[in-house]
Every structure is written in structure tokens, then in C-alpha cells.
Length: 111
Image 1 (cartoon, rainbow, N blue to C red):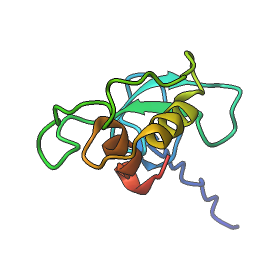
Image 2: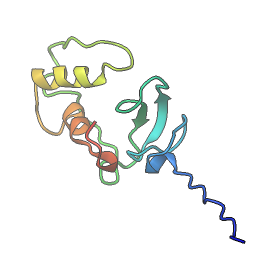
Image 3: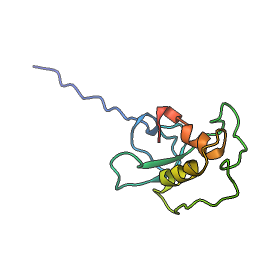
Image 4: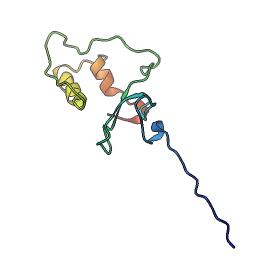
């Protein structure tokens, strides 16, 4: 008679690539504030950068190197990447909010 083996159930946390809910610590290390149930990958979870993401302190910077000219942006979920690209195209001065956010690689992610 053979022994019955019960398979081990492994639960993967949100931070390690499992399912996320609003309020969880996400794969990028921030707090999940939006979940798009219809997206299978990429952009399914939006996270706020964790406190201290800038090597210990949150920076106080201007949005762009050119704060005198308006930039066309769009409101709503899903426009962040396009808005960031528009601001950087207007002025890509280093050490500004938009360039620092664009360069941030929380959890090794580039988006």
C-alpha cells in the first residue's frame, strides 16, 4: 500500500509576484493604491514609492527644469508614462521630480 502525499500549497506574497490588493506592499516596494483587474500584466498594480526611496529621504524638487512653460498632460489612470515623457521632452534637467521618478527602479522594475 502506498502512502498518500498531500501537495504543499505555496502562497506567494504580493511583493514576491503574487496577487496584490490595495494596501499591500507591491513588487516595487511601494504601497499598492490601484489594482486593474482587467490587465493580465504590466500596469496591473500601481504603487506609491516607499518612504525613503531616495536613499533615506524624500526629495523636495521642482517638477521640471522649465517651470515657466506648460506641458500638455492627460488626467486619469494609464497616462502617467505619456505625461512623464512629455515633461522630459520639454526639459530633461537632471535632479528634478520627473527625471528622478523616471530613473527610479524600485524592486528592479523600470516602469
